[in-house]
Amino acid sequence: MKNLSFQRKFLSTLMGGLFLATTSLVHSQEYPTRPVSIVVPFSAGGPTDAVARLLAVPMTKFLGQTVLVENTVGAGGTIASNRVAKSPKDGYMVLFHHIGISTAPALYSKLPYDTLNDFEYIGQVVNAPMTLIGRKNLPANNFKELLAYIQTNKDKVTLANAGPGAVSQLCGMLFTSQVGVALTQVPYKGTGPAITDILGGQVDLLCDQTTNTLTYIRSDKVKLYGVTTTQRLSSLPEVPTLNEQGLKGFQVVAWHGMYVSKGTPQPVLDKLNAALKNALNDPDVRSRLKDLNVEIAKPEDVTPASLKHQVESEVKKWAPIIKASGAYVE
Ligand code: ASP
Image (tube, rainbow, N blue to C red; front, top):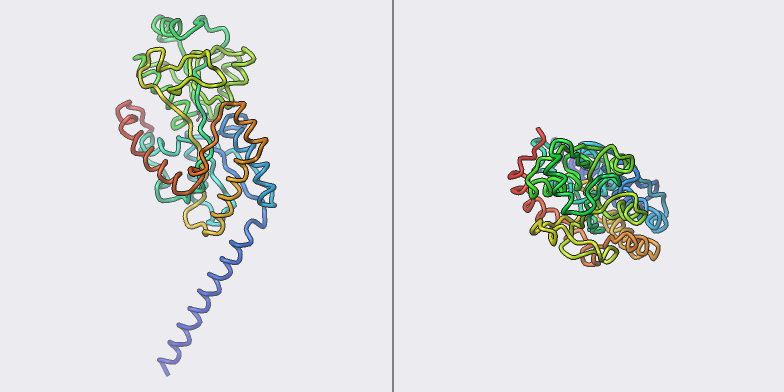
């Protein structure tokens, strides 16, 4: 008798489990049935935001549901990463982040999420080169003059960034350590507000993605001192790299990826990957990004395996560099 009731209980638990698994499979195959959010870790009007908004248009068409962009700003992108890491495992909240996801573990003494274990990877997205720009009325007209200006105005010169963990901060950190001068850093919640202050002359320098800076460089609203890639940029062939101008080995490229929370079902991951691939093949997206000198990830890199590998190797690469620099957020 006792045995019979145990068997009944066991069977009903088994059936319940099977029912739940089947329902979640059916749901994940129907995905998406409501709007999907792309969470951007920086303010609206910045380069990460700009690329996300560009991708949201073809992704909306492909998924048949509105893809919205939400800006969850602060703490160099870690608030957004944590939000997505803790979100339901259903694919309705997608993180669009850059290289900062891999520098944060070395920069922050405590992170409320586990970078390597709390996400599912969708794929790499774009690689954006960066530029060192200054306010228009900065007296230095080229890199050589900038170095001299920095030496004589050490205590005055300010360098904007989008917070500890932002790629602009990383670039600024490499710049100041190679130049050997600790400039005053001015943190913002994204490039949007940082550029506003460069344009207004409230802050002196910023190292940021071409996605945003190119427009102001082309319209002569800012000064340009160099590019952060090892090769000159096709859109600015006359502008020397920082490496060429004496900062040996200087290279920062803002690579970007898409993530969802760990445990999101495979059919949802596959659909998001297909939507991303489709968006990166969209002719409007391609021509817009080309115009901004932003490189689209190679098809073989728009994959979960490639992004996973990228994050893991970049976490390893930046940890000792950041440690040596002393940049650390308690
Ligand atoms: N470019 C920024 C950074 O420095 C963030 C942004 O996209 O606004 O990380």
